[in-house]
Amino acid sequence: MSTNVRVEARYVSHDAPQDQKERAFKQLLANFKRKVNESGVLLDLARKSAYESKGEKTRRKRKESIIKREKEASEFNSKLRDRFGSNSKKAPKRNFKRISEQGTT
Image (cartoon, rainbow, N blue to C red; front, top):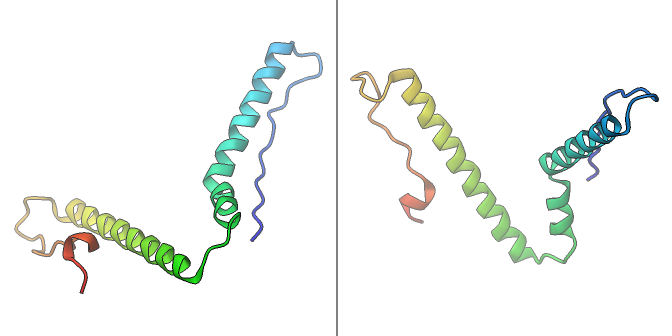
C-alpha cells in the first residue's frame, strides 16, 4: 500500500533574510513529520520490515479489533451522556462495558 504525503511550503521571497527562510523550512519539516505520523507510514513500514506469521497476524488483528470496539463503545456512551445527561431519568439504563471487563466467552 502506497501513501502519498504532501506538504506545501509557505512562500518566502528570494530577498528575505536567512532567519525567515530557516523558519519557513523548519515549519515545512514539522508539517511533513506530523503528516507522516498521522498517515501511519512509519508504523506500516515497521510492521512489514519483518515476517509476521499467520498466528501473529491473527492475534494482532484481534487486538486491533478489540481496541476499535472499545473506542466505539466509549464514544457511544459519551454521546448518550451528552444527549440525556448523566442524571436524567430518561437516560437508558444500559452501559456498554468494555470487552476486557466482560470477560471472554
